[in-house]
Length: 151
Length: 138
Image 1 (tube, rainbow over the protein chains, first blue to last red):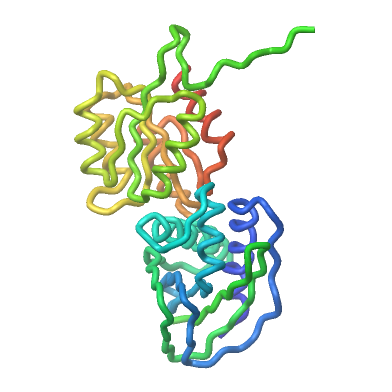
Image 2: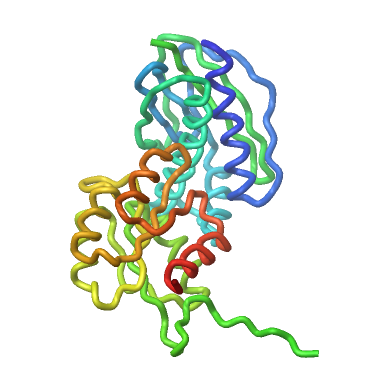
């Protein structure tokens, strides 16, 4: 998998989170995952279909996810419900929307699916190894896990 | 020294509130818009979660609504189609599109179809208030 596919998602996540959290957000070192990814408690999954296909996952633990949605809502949220799901969906939409723009500028054409939210630990199986980049916020760290390939 | 007191941007010259219809499939975005707009005394007359419901609610309140915020990507009926229906009902309707980045072509289509402006998410309080105020006070 090409590194140029993951960078737009990482840059987009960093810039969107800086805006919605109003504080500094940084990225860690990229690493190679396996074809089977065991995810944390909360997964925001966006699919890509077109010239580039596969999936992008925001992989968070429960505490970090709840802290981020609390800041986005301006109120403390302590459990997962319709509003936390809607907030995570919107976060996924904003990150994928911005990344799509960057990938389109690089000449790739594809569509993205609306984000799906999974609460509870889950496993994703792919045909290629994923690339993983940690994102560090003051509310906790999470991972962007990307498995994309050119068609 | 006198300090300038700013009037809330949701108020008309006669002191009544501008009335807003929010059409968005995300309850999170609906809540954000509600919080931002009511903080400046806009009145949220109603909210809808897809284009079909949005058009129905526009028809229901058309004589009262001053501005509609309309999401572009929605289930059942998307924002562009809903905009076309609303413009047929009232060619002078004031509609502002709400869009994620990456939907530039659709935003252009909406502006051609009669939308007065657009706002890109994540929603910035000041941008939302200034764009909506600029449209309603024209």
